[in-house]
Length: 258
Image (cartoon, rainbow, N blue to C red; front, side, top):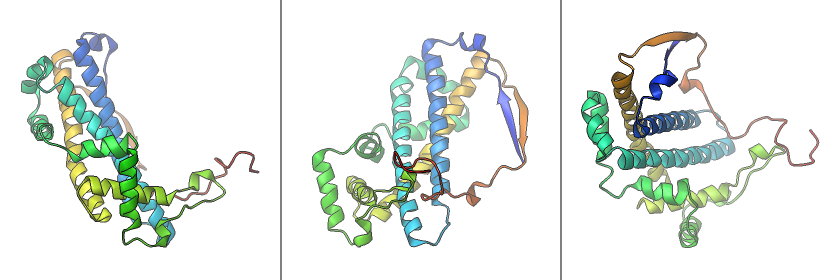
């Protein structure tokens, strides 16, 4: 059973925050929401399911898409902390107010600001923006000369548009990502990415909650959480799957009979 608690955020109290405090509080909360949502999708999409080789192949490619989006969101969250908290008057006030857990998370995140980060490369070229022409051509050449087989150069389709997948497109993109990371093996590059982003995602959410907690203490007094729901039938995330191919009577081609 999941006990869901609610912490009230009265509008009159929120009005007492400075514009900088309020903006960062709300944006960090939004970033945490996005990271948690996408991380759940990554976990569910990687759960073992069908043994059908086509479904397995396309569902794995779907996971790559979620990972790219997650990396883009995480990079934007890091930029938010770097620009509006690190070294700012707001940061100087709130760093001493952070809990030990949030302080540790913040210190680990700070180490990523001074080095060239693979998250930046992926966010700028594959997550939130399309690769430049030269980068896309380089990715294609790497893919076409890789050890992949003919089934990597195809697209899958069904009566429902939702089940269409341009596999060749993703096959080229993952080679571009691997090349940007200095990796020659796309599977190894993906494994390293998943290993890297898990602790960063955790640190971002830990810092976001720690900053919120400091805001609460300053303006709201002690935190008061009230249990508002008990969800008895919540699924175990390890039991869920998100296959690419799904039965649907919607999202058919325009003019197709339903």
